[in-house]
Image: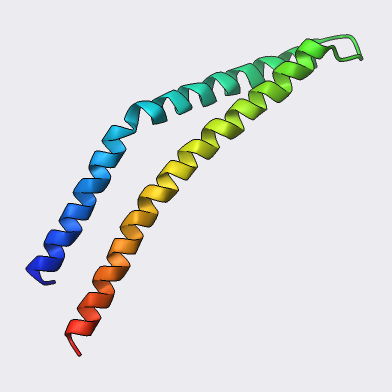
Length: 105
């Protein structure tokens, strides 16, 4: 690999590292929200299974749907962020591969 291409790839990976560090707190918050939602979901399922009554009240349904919504939103945000970050790296690598191929022709 050419030194110029290696330098471009290193700069791209350094930019990705800076980007990951920049949004670290946001990712941690989304992970904590997802964990809290998961714990709420386990608690609600436990209440649902241990409850002797056959009717569901609003609080239990709210905790079931609310916690699953928290899990979905937090995992979607984390997945979206990593998808964007790795798409950036993928695009740069594709450009580098194309430029490497055109230089050999």
